[in-house]
Image (cartoon, rainbow, N blue to C red; front, top):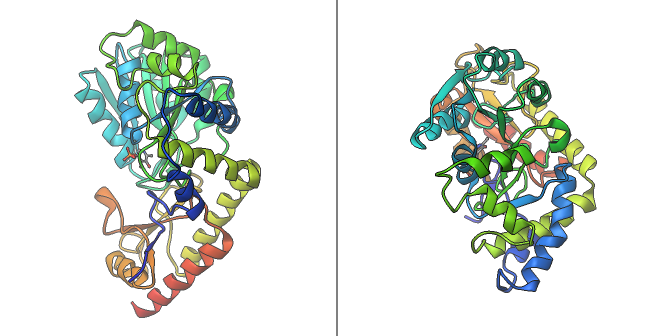
Length: 362
Ligand SMILES: *Cc1c(COP(=O)(O)O)cnc(C)c1O
């Protein structure tokens, strides 16, 4: 059987054009060719994140920079906002870095709300918090705007935000939000191969990092800043990824960012409509559903027809598409369908035809 097209929420399908760019001939990472390549992308990345800060490129998956943010910015204690598999894990990572850390845990499927954070920060114990904008395991999007607004009240708390599965699919205005770190691995909505993370830091974050010992070398934000000023990275980056990102940014701006955001909203709505047509309910709390994927209840907890997600996944895979059969502790009761990256009405309709066919066989 040929290639199975990815509709899991990361990694997602990578286009031929992107792979072509990825396979460009190698250049030296201290030469003018590399500097020109990065310098050309910098204003595009800044426009994407609506920031005047430099945007950094880390050869690592997202967790490298997520862990790095803890090592660079947490001195007193970090508040880890937890609502799913990825955000829950950040507490464990903070502790493994030897930091004082506390959980703000809400049930999976619920978003994180500003008033919950406010109640904890008010204690004055914390100098950093971690938040996942779009919790990919549960398909839940937390209201970043209302949370970021707290920064004005707590200027000394570093707001570290993972936008791994939302960056480039929804508008994220870094400077306006006033948060301190924003990061994304590129195998999600960017639709690049895994292995590269894009991130930016506020002035305050760079200042804080400068005062912290034990921030290590590979993910030292001060090193990233110094190098980015010269259109370079601290160590040898995955140059293939940098070429691929340059190609992808061309695509973003050729399409237009607003049109790209609208396309994600529309293909997500199509997925919700497909689920509703089959009597399925979405897992997240109403009003906080992701727009880059749908996490769908298989019926086990919500009543009505119960569908075996593993069987559904197999029947769809036999037709050339890979969906996700549920993640972590909601595996077995949910399944997930991604619409992030390059997906269009046409490509989603091909998937829905395969899903309809599979449903008919269950
Ligand atoms: C995928 C994902 C991660 C983990 O990324 P890695 O590439 O495995 O490091 C972190 N956060 C979110 C929200 C994700 O979706």
